[in-house]
Amino acid sequence: MDKKKIRNICIVGQLKARMSKNDKPIAHNEQPNIDIAGPAQMKLRHFRIIHSFVLAVVVPIFLSGVYLWGFAKDQYLSSMSFSVRTESLQSATDLLGGLSSITGSSSSDVDIVTQYIASSDLVQIVNEKIDLRAKFSTAWPMDFIYAFNPKGEFEDLLEYWNNNVTTRSENGIVTLTVRSFDPETSYEITRIVYEASRELINRLSDEAHADATRFSREELRAAEERLTQAREAMTNFRLEAQIIDPNASLQAQMSLLTELQVQLSENEVQKDLLSRTAQANDPRLNELNRKISALQAQIAIEQQKFGRGGMGPGGESYATLFARYEGLSSDLQFSEEAYRSAQLAYSSAIAEAKRKARYLVAHVQPTIAEKSLYPQRMMQLLVIGLFVMLVWSVGLLIFYSIRDRR
Image 1 (cartoon, rainbow, N blue to C red):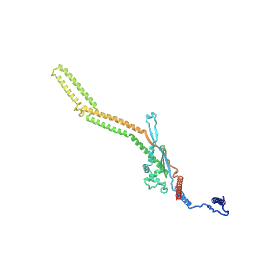
Image 2: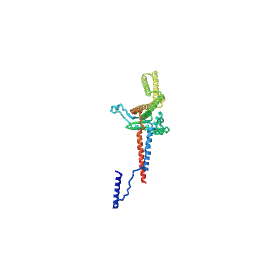
Image 3: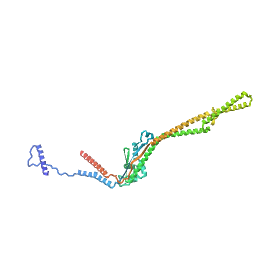
């Protein structure tokens, strides 16, 4: 459609509008006043929008591309996967009863390992073996975004560590990922982190075993001390009484007293028989009287050893001596039984603790990277472009909405 036809259409439309308003025809020679729109032209606000787009979108994308491809240094990745295994070893009785060993992974142990990898303690351990500041700052100051500033404090090093040494746990399996500017450094850091984590799990396992056996071990120590005291008391008693076995000494003493009483009875019988046939001044009667008197005196002395104030072994009566011995013997026997029970309980606790083993198992060993995977330049540039485009669009909409309200 050319300009002439457009003009005629506009004229016809205006004529109809005027006729509908005035209800009178227009003269043939009368020319209507018609405003025709000219071609669109760029205004100042359009140039401002273009300038803002260049400054807010094009320039950041260009600068980001220059930095990513011109200054950012390649980063190499090293990763491995491991898990914390808790294995219960069943005894022979349990196996005969149909119970098999149960092997699993504890979520609490996995959380402990992941928190330990992100802790300052592990950073200090790794930093003592390799210089993390030097390894992480090889690209400084050219790559000032991805490289570490060697003048930073330890807290800055810890933050940089957590950004480049990451962990991800899924179904009890921990995936460790390490990034650095050198493939050997990434591999070495991964290996040191795994060794330190394994030492942590072994230490926790040893502490758990010690906690499980602490009570039985204390009971065994107390029983051992009590047994030692009981044996020392028995030894002191034997040294004071100068006898090894009071039962044997008492039995010998009773045998001696019985023998004296038998001899006294025999002499009294002989005296009675002889007194019936011999004279009163018979020398044989005098001899028997002397023997009887001596036996009676000796029996009295031996019997006195069993009474109060008797002079038995160690200057004590046999009754007191034997009472002391029975008390010490009972204490010694009880201490020995208690020691055997405590020793059995301690052995059982150790065996039970050894049945439960907790250790770290590596499923995927770390390897030395051959190709740089970071920084992901195209992905980073795309994200930056989308972000600045979104910010510019939102800012432009806010500006025009404020302007239209005025």
